[in-house]
Length: 143
Image 1 (cartoon, rainbow, N blue to C red):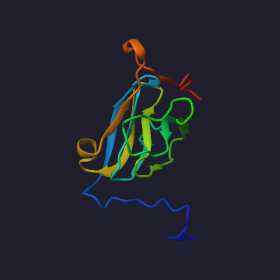
Image 2: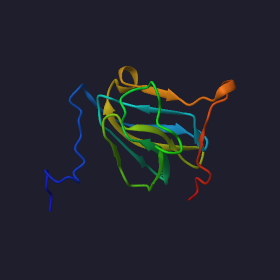
Image 3: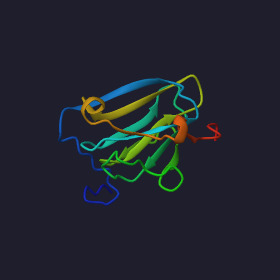
Image 4: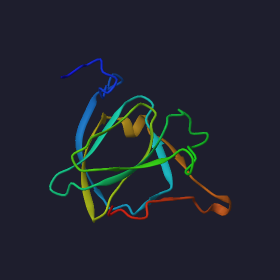
């Protein structure tokens, strides 16, 4: 039975602008990431879709609402394997990196605000001394 007040309800906040629901066809980006992003003003929903729907991976971490320091790759970032047909809802401020997937390309439903990636794209780039970046590597994307 549906209960709108359930703590398990995926409550969305799209109140800060015009919602945008679209399909992204993304090229393969490899099996690692060296940066992580959050959106402070909107919740976001993401799901693999279409005939090429497949499991995908995303690194996530709890909100901090600052880019002065990113979440620690080993301590704070959790990599999730999301099966096809499952919608991932991220709260405001959720750090995220991905989606990562196996294959040449994949399609995703995305629900956010129409200008999220222009006005609310807060990114932290992992770097090491000497200029080489730290990366979180997902060793086996075929899991």
